[in-house]
Length: 221
Image: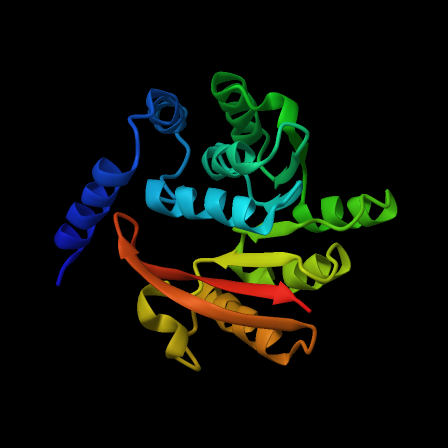
């Protein structure tokens, strides 16, 4: 098996199950044109996030790591009309591109984009009594995974779903001493979820257009 067949299967999934979506195509093109790194979730993964929002019956979503807003749009689409995604982005250029993409996708009214270091933004949310979120998606700098998960617990309630992306790292997650900060961050996510009594979680390995990786998914008890 190779990345070629993984990508072909991803394309088959999309062509079989999804309607053509020129808006999301334009979002990805805008991201490329503006020089953003091509690290968005895949279309199939984006649809999974949207479905998780709907399955949870979420009205509030917290996203750590906006990039160009592709995953944000998928989740916003899964929300009811009065739902809200609070999304956190460090890079002002990425945030500018994301705002334009939210306008393009017609979801600006559902999105609260906050720019700055995510740990500061998370602390501000807590200070503002922003309330507990129904679903939290963590997809930012991987070494901070345990810090983001710690804040996720503070901004959650019983029933909150927490999703942490990129936790398999081409299988390198099994290496105890990889010397790779991103791999160590992935392992830290597993340690946090496994060691937190209020969380019940698992992980899903994924292959596809984005290579070999996966999500950790947990629910707050």
